[in-house]
Image 1 (tube, rainbow, N blue to C red):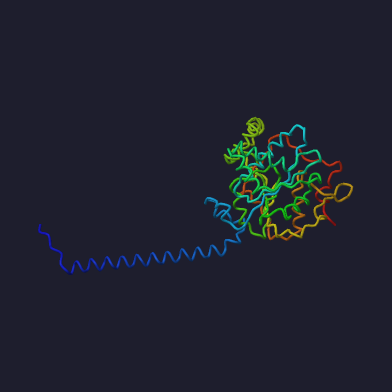
Image 2 (tube, rainbow, N blue to C red):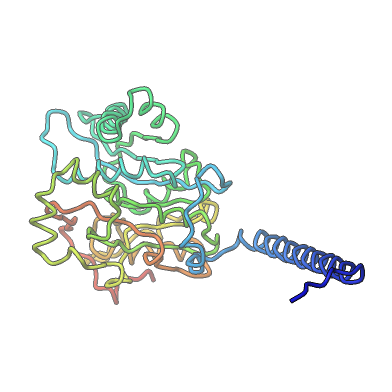
Length: 348
């Protein structure tokens, strides 16, 4: 078979086809780039007002670092100071483990601890030293590194008013010592993981609460390691696994109970009224209530709704996880004079 020599006409046509193909590909690429930039612009315009209920669209992406955001998040809690010479309560050690985990959580820009103390109790200086020692032991930090972290991130405030009421805790959360735009107010035995990064995108008009996920096998490895390093594994094997709660997601089971509050600080500043944070006892007297009382979170929600009319209240425990470091025996404050029943416990 004899091969034909390419003619000038065939070579010209081939070259022309190649040039046309390159031109079309270039135009398609430019159009795709334009559409991508247009989409980015739209996302930037709307990202500042994302409702926490819509945050699931980004949960498969790695959370950005805290330094990349303008919105700052402060964690606020209360801790009782150890009386000098007194044997430490086992739950105190659990609380220290949770505080340590939250101090080392990169999604908190500030950790504020209101230290409830008596005259003969340890002070914020002792608390700072204890957290520094634990940071060196569990995170292999030098003394200089741990002290630098605590000096930059942790604010401890000595208070001698006794166990703080819910009103005092919310007042503390909006005080000048709290520098974050978004406040996470919680019991001191709550530990948070990387899902806390979503708090930065909270819609200012939404009040978010978190029901705890408990203490289960779904907990992230770093949090569980902190607990085990400080408490050992006896409490886990005896209390959790044997009681059948090791695989139970408490968030899914109880959406009407919560231990954590997340809100924009600016929405409550100057709006809190002490009389709204009181409940009636059976003598018909209005008294303040504390965070460790049964039913206190429901009463506090009513109080918050009197302070500011949030557009919605959302239990975001399916998006932001909190883990309860409390496997030691639990206690709740019991009043000598009980509360009125829920149907009667309303302000007139």
